[in-house]
Image: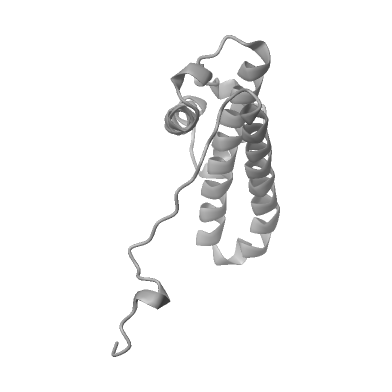
Amino acid sequence: MAIEVQDVLDLGFKSEMFRIRGGSSFDGYIEEIIALKAAILKGQIGLALYNTTDALKIEYVKRIEVCYVASELCQRRINIMLANVDSTPETAPVYKQQKSYDSESDSLMNLLTEYGYSGHTAVSSHFSSASEVPDDA
């Protein structure tokens, strides 16, 4: 059920923002990001929910995917802007928009919980906790 390139273009992203010339190469750029984020979302919610036929769930899943792709594009735009030191103050609005997409996708994921999806995040580290460090270290 992957979203379409037009769903992303409708948000106002333009090839010039990413230093890409030509519409078809920009479409391909977006398609790669859509494929990446669709795979991540499928892994998060499972194929059954990703391929649901329930109209409301479809809208939630599609919007989460749009938000994931938009957030990735915002991050890439920030990276491009940071490469140009003179434009650093301009990254604040893009960063704010990215956080808005992240927040919206989180909210929609919470709504999917009502439909039986239960997502969890495991955080791990290869570093020892302070209590595990020997006294003579």
